[in-house]
Image (tube, each protein chain N blue to C red):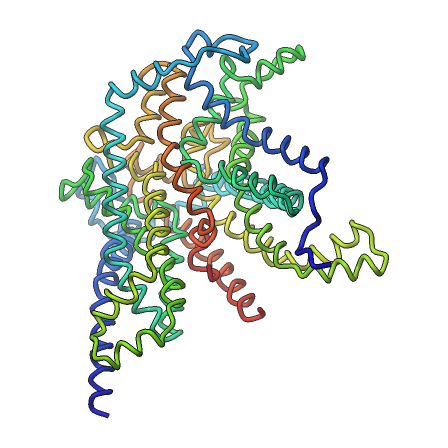
Length: 299
Length: 275
């Protein structure tokens, strides 16, 4: 009994020593910065005016300014458009690709790996790739348009096309993610389901809508939410392709916060923008976790 | 009907898949072929199907400041991976032998660090580094990369530890081994493949970073992704060199990530669903 007790105590001591360093480091490099961000957002801190970092005379001033700031409101709207269309295309195309590749053959299994390339590339390389595609002098796209006697406008500096150009690049980069998730789900569908439906005289379309789709629906929702959360991070594409322009057509909230802090030195106001963005992302994350849990409980 | 899910692919379908693959990868292949062309050739349309590839872009790149930034990328990614593994592996082990509640709380914390937009960390880190003089240092990059790599290690390693049968540890306990010995001598060797996969993912996340390096470095600690962008801004429009720079930055990523593609999804969805 006492021996068992000492083993148990030794185990607990070991656990504490194993966990403590990580918890302390996480506290210092994640929790403390988050609290600091919150604190700074209550000040009018500007880089050119160091004294303003400790000015808490009007703590909620930044937050009061936000609703009346047309650039901030516009940035939320741009982000909403980018996220909506990007996620929609990624889910639809990713699912189509998964359905196309959900088949047995040596060649297809070999090819699957190559479909993942856009997703694993460093994001800045993806931005460079699309920069080359969108630059008229060196782009095969503009050459092809020229062959068809069509003068294509400069996509990334056009009011009508700049956001579309970003959405296309973002979709290209991330459709492998939804593809991979959906393919994994497809592979868990028991073959008997569609066989039974076939015997009952269902056609392919009916099988898709009544057997396959209900089965992969939770995965579609989960991957859409993951993409939704990460769509906030589309920084390199915007940085390299449009710089938020023309005007503020492609200026998402993340980019606006970046410009405020590191271009204009408005650290306090930028922190407030970031805090609001963080809260929105957290709300969606809660949703993802809730759905994830429920799904885990169901299966 | 013993055939598992999915019909066998017909020839038509296979051709279709091949065409889709080529179309999808064409932007990527365009960058790659450009890196082997001289600038005159790049501007030539219609593009010649057969040309004599040149390594000129790569060699001139290597003799420029780019090689130093490549080394910076290598150093910051390696050190942050090592640090995250050193701290995170024991923590993941302890958690895998722990109660459900503690794990759920932690998985939420991990999710938050994974989901937060990078700028949320950048502002406090920038101010702090400016104050203690860590701006533009590899050390500074290692620290901030650890902020997302450590949660990733803790998340990724847990299922590997769970797959080690408890009976092994119990047997060693009976033989009088301490918890530390069991961890180091019995459990760790069994999860070696998991450690390798996790290490590669950590390395890739740090290597791929652009945002943190853009803001927290200037010249001394500039990483390869930032250096590529700098070409665009300062070295005119040397497309061949830009393409070669991009190709060099993506080379290690392509090699490594294809090796761990099985774990890519669980790394990407860390925190929300079980890997």
